[in-house]
Image 1 (cartoon, rainbow, N blue to C red):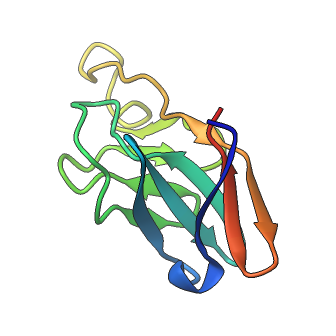
Image 2: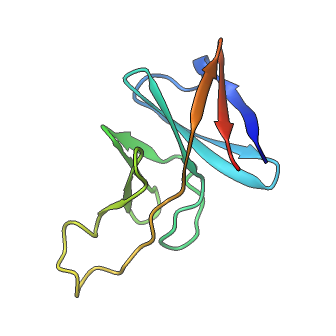
Length: 111
């Protein structure tokens, strides 16, 4: 699936993250101070949807178990960087996708 229109810019206010279904896939669009980011819509921790995820600066937080991921790199920020490695369950990074604004629309490369 190449570049795909996901939403209108107006659907993702500044400081918010929104969940979208795109065919059989899902994606979360985050608006960090007017800069848009796209991450996979499924949390790598337990495989639950990131619908209602919260955006905290450069981090998206899963609503289920509060795992957090960088919207820029996809790396797990919590609990991986908080607890000692022997206590934290290792978590794969979340997939990130390139974003383009085309006029008032948000396009994401899901390839």
